[in-house]
Image 1 (cartoon, rainbow, N blue to C red):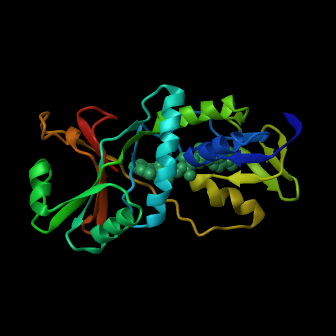
Image 2: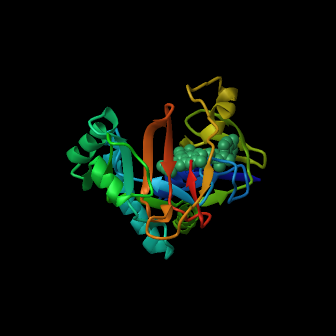
Image 3: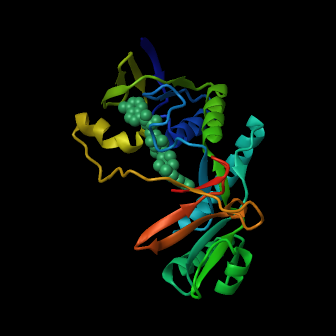
Length: 271
Ligand SMILES: Cc1cc2nc3c(=O)[nH]c(=O)nc-3n(C[C@H](O)[C@H](O)[C@H](O)COP(=O)(O)OP(=O)(O)OC[C@H]3O[C@@H](n4cnc5c(N)ncnc54)[C@H](O)[C@@H]3O)c2cc1C
């Protein structure tokens, strides 16, 4: 197709990053935004697929903790506008050695940002969550604002909001190349567009896409294994009753994330 209009912004990639960028841009009055996605939506080939993601304020970098002020309001507004449950505030646990760098950095980030948390000693941790089995020197920081983001619902709600704010969404359209300039030309497998700016949110496809511009970013896509563990009990000690969690370098240097059993009831995903 041929589209002779000039967009204020053209966003490439309809994962969570591209969709959020396009949706936020479309809310600026008078801003004309085009979002291009190579696969028909929804699709399961990018990083943003699936039903659940952990969201939290406890990080080892205070910038992320601060950013969550914006995100929490954003998810709440999206939830109100869509009428769907997008966020479940079940809490988040940062698990690590008492006195170790990981827990200390989490405490620091929460404290400087005045975010609410509870620090559990190893004894309290074991008593509160007997379904987990940890030794004497392991405790946790409980981030009360953390929880589960219903990822597929959030993505759909953002796409709907984008379109309702006047944005143009074209899925099943692969962007093949850009011609840089004051007005950027964007050529796809179906047509050409012009934009005053282009936002690239191609996720793992980034370097593949940038090759025609002779640009290579220091990015390394990695495959992430998601394991689903069958629950052993269904009482109050069941993994379903856990907050989300992250256990830092617990297993031969590998880390484990845990999410309550929402995606496949009866099993708990540990990406
Ligand atoms: C298993 C797993 C578990 C995770 N758990 C968490 C978690 O609990 N909490 C958390 O915060 N994060 C988590 N993450 C990370 C988070 O999901 C990603 O950071 C996020 O989804 C990245 O989104 P994205 O939009 O950058 O990438 P993607 O979702 O991969 O989107 C990129 C999009 O660009 C499109 N595209 C690429 N090239 C082109 C082109 N040339 N033309 C048109 N379209 C193009 C692709 O088709 C794709 O849709 C997890 C990731 C995985 C894989």
